[in-house]
Image (cartoon, rainbow, N blue to C red; front, top):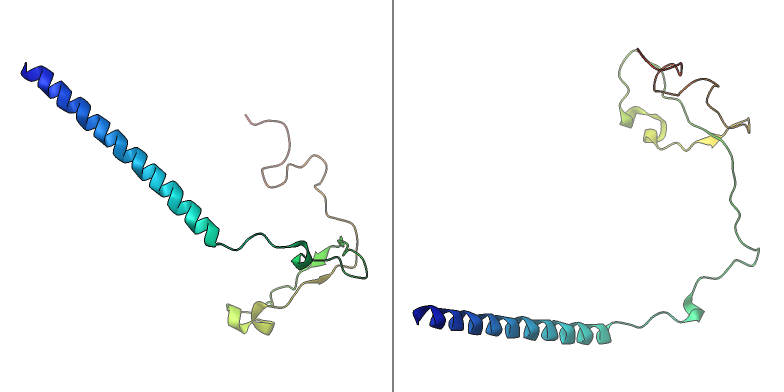
Length: 116
């Protein structure tokens, strides 16, 4: 008999827990909808960005040449660099992009046949 009473109490406890979980989910739904109503709506088409009068901006493909670090006998720190290391790159005189050498695998060895 005690076992049956324990099972009944367990069943009632699970049912109460289920009702509490459902109540929390419903409350969260209503709270979320209330918060969403206070948010501004989507922007209207008039406030969207427009294409410039001169037409769309096109991409430019060019090779950039970095400024080299000055060579010296002592260690050069970032604040000792020209313009504190913020000098922009410049256009490279050649338009060809550097490619891998044929038969080379780049930085992973000689590119020859497999190892031993």
